[in-house]
Picture 1 (cartoon, rainbow, N blue to C red):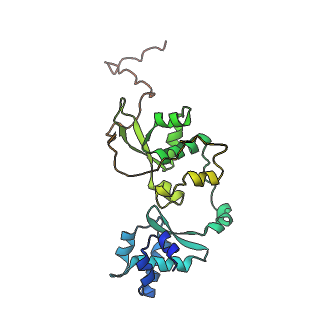
Picture 2: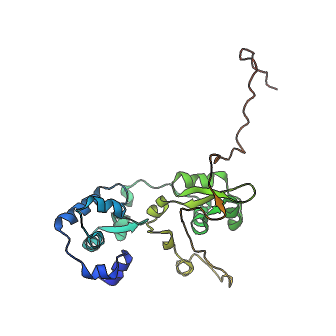
Picture 3: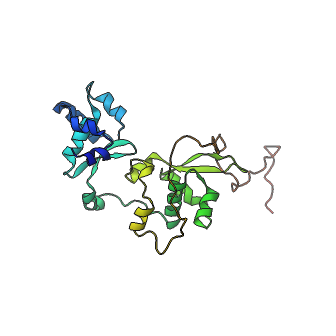
Length: 246
């Protein structure tokens, strides 16, 4: 196994070089677990189902090497393991799967801001985008499972802070939020046209689940009822006829 491939799989070089024997039966069990799992599996879950004493990292490395040239490959997403279609074959299967819901430009920009600037509030998203976002934009991203409510900012009004989810990493094939492209990668992909200001930079994303010093727990009152309809006044006498509309 090459040192480069071992590094991509998060396998220490010494482990990759030693590669102690892993029985064929163990490899069959590992393969079956990953094939049958509806979602990526973490290493603790895999280890608990393999024979005692199995060197899981070596087994994963061998399985990855086995699948490397095939139509299905072993990949690591969100710190977990899964069997996925080889990237160069995905276009052949696209017509066999339902077309995913397309996000509006506002939703895509909002998702990018949340990913790079989290924890971030609605007001901060609007400041970065330079325009007001509709109430439904964040709702769509939350319903998709890619954005979550983290906490509340310790500031006047206690605005809700937003961050990405594990489902976001899984959907976009990222092992961690650190795998988001940096400035040079975005330039190379043509996302920036013209000259950028000298002090322009891309923030270092972090999706740490713990609250930061400027955040506090959500509490029970997480719904914004500012635009909710006012409740109708209750009649003192249940048998009294309803009031006439004016």
